[in-house]
Length: 419
Image (cartoon, rainbow, N blue to C red; front, side, top):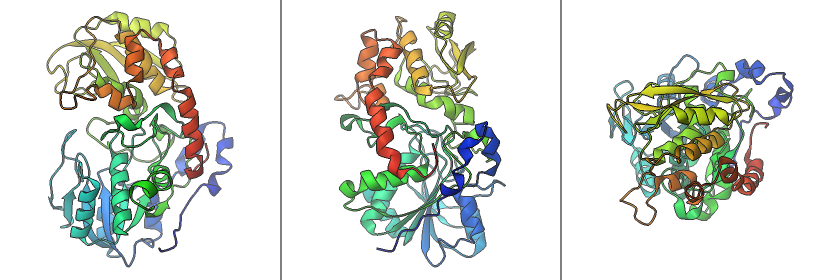
């Protein structure tokens, strides 16, 4: 196997944690793509390359990786692979753009949404690639599906004997882990392996974690992995602390503010009686339902949760749950992103919403053995059953304290940036 190399920026960051404010160092962040372009594509020259990306794979001038690579004439591109929402981002949640020819570059774009590892192998063979490049902005939550696209693509590359290159990008919500662990009996497309709900890792760090912890058992061997790391990033920096451009990674993730609340309010996808704000201009920040009222926000405000306030809000979704129906609820307003714990906040919101007689968990008839979507989102039935039994948010979050600490220790050897 070719010797692995790593363009890592961790050493240069050793002093960055001493700054008075995380934002003070934000202007110096460079992504893996920035560094690859500066090197004149050195890590990819002389190889036939396949690219897994979406609209987020851009430089500071919003120029896309594939367009830059194609225009350089220095990289042989065998094909592009589009995840959920498509390579150019034209599809809604649960959709893709299909396989076809990209109008801008003339390259073949293969539809890889929902691809199994066997399908990935077939796609690699069809494109005739030797090296696979991954560049997608993650949102930082276990149930955001691009990190599982990464996992399956890596496992398939390992089986096919291909090289895998991750162009790293900062985690937009920082490097701290929160929340419960996924358990083996509740894995799905929104959580395929045992990581916690807010993993606090970049995609490059996740790739290293997958390669060391999961791929040897599942694929028979680790993949030949290179991570082209960021420079100037550390785990206290969030998207708002940097000058990096934000491109919505999916239609319902429009801003870094959305990403910040998503690991918590994303759990409302598992509640049938409450909208998580899809179909509004502030998805996952606006949360409510037709049978809710202002008392929910009052009770949440009384909890005095760190780093967050709750504005009484009314909204009418244009699609998804309760289309055209007036919903009452709250807008989640993060006031201190460093003190804010999105998962604990989401659990508190669920616990208070559970008091309403209309409250109902979303049940999925297609999976009768594991019918509750909330169990797949949170990794087990534990949170649902505790809240049904009247547990408080403090009691529910205490239940995962040990597993969160164990995960933090397990991930430590794979981290590239200071925490």
